Amino acid sequence: MSATKDTQLELHRMMMLIRLFEEALEEMFSRGLLHGTMHLSIGQEATAAGACLALDKKDLITSTHRGHGHCLGKGADPYKMFAELLGREDGYCRGRGGSMHIADLSNGNLGANGIVAGSLTISVGAALSFQLQKKENIVLCFFGDGAVNEGSFHEALNLASLWNLPVLFLCENNQYGMSMASEKAVAGESIASRGNSYGIESIQIDGNDVEAVYESVSNYKDEILTGNRPKFIEAITYRYRGHSKSDRNLYRTSEEINFWKDEKDPIKRYIGKLLEQGITEIDLKEIDEEVKNLIRTSVKKALDSPLSPITNLEEDSYA
Picture 1 (spheres, rainbow, N blue to C red):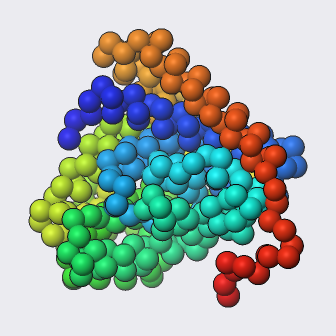
Picture 2: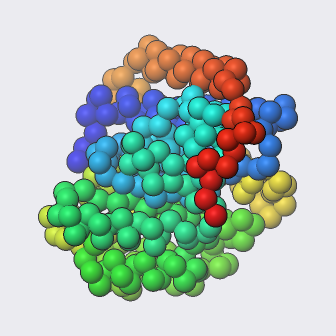
């Protein structure tokens, strides 16, 4: 499915929303307003924006520890996300989940997950539910390259293939599992080839090309629903920041990072493409200003909102 002009503008808007959301979090962290750690997806915006825009509201996603972009892409309110990370009562999980455990069931987001590969088996269970209920929807499972050596990865692909489940596995290969380069940790021709080994049709795409992501997910969704078989996408992308806020980036060079920023940045590349196709700088500036204002007002509102009172901290908490 090719992107229309309206879809192209929405893809740009969503990438800008994710980028500015993550940069706002980084700024608040530097001011001591956020505690603990976080895993930013700056540089990876195209995978979340392209994949989620190809879905319907009733399609489900499972996410990862680096899941802010997925949550926004599936329709989350930035204010409620900021509130969650700030421990506010108005957050999606009443301030109890924080960065790695945001869930938004109203928009089909089954939640981020602090366990590497933890989303894979959840996605298979949700897809089985769709199959048993004969629903015309799919589950999109986000995971990273660091997950593909976990047992849950292989168990999930095996069962999805065996039972013909309506699940699309999307590996965001940002080329590092924490500090370990995936090329030094993952055997075989590619991560996509692992999907093929389970009889699942698999492709590798440029994960920093937002339209390539959108079209691949759109096409595979149609094929899943008509052919009753799972699919697998490996999206090659790159994170500019460290694995988490404590990561000093000692395992890669500044030249490598700058190459991806200068030559492969998903937003910069897409702006160039849109201008070549006749979309004006005025169109893009209006979108950028709208997103900047949304982020500013959401941050202010979240900072002004009440913390969860100590008296009800045990509510909605499960062990």
